[in-house]
Image 1: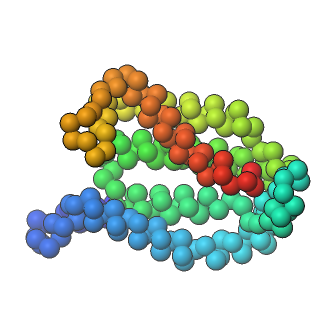
Image 2: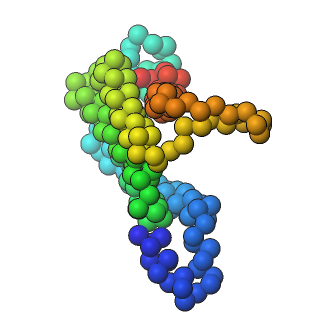
Image 3: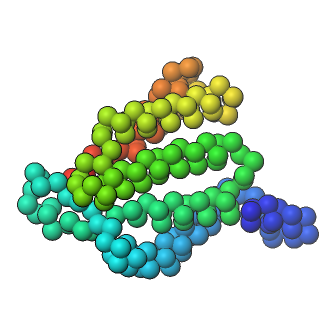
Length: 196
């Protein structure tokens, strides 16, 4: 929104032409999300504690993890709010890749929300099964990557870092490759967390 508002005024002010650069908008987006999180996090954590929405820790893990029982969960709600504010304020809303990214982000958010909700309601650490999570994550990632690839929004050529002349055109396999990157990145923290 602010992106389009500033673009409207660039014809009158050469100084505002700087807002056309994605690097500046990325920094402003980062700062917007940071400010939203810094302002609302203390209030949000207090609300979670009052409502006793805490993490359930598996009892078959290390005994040192048991002290983390009751740690407020559902923090993703605040993070998604901050990122959506940043994307809507500073993003180019006519860019299909922005919407594709937000679709994956929101779908994974709902999956995480349902997982945490089940843990809180049933008072255990099970939540959504790993098989169901992986299946949904793969379906979402393949759908969005396939949509972007078949509509020509992405290039299937992969360049090897530090080598200028080495590149591979993955063709249709790009959909599977990019979906794998999304799912692997999504689960990188969960697999090393130890509390789930």
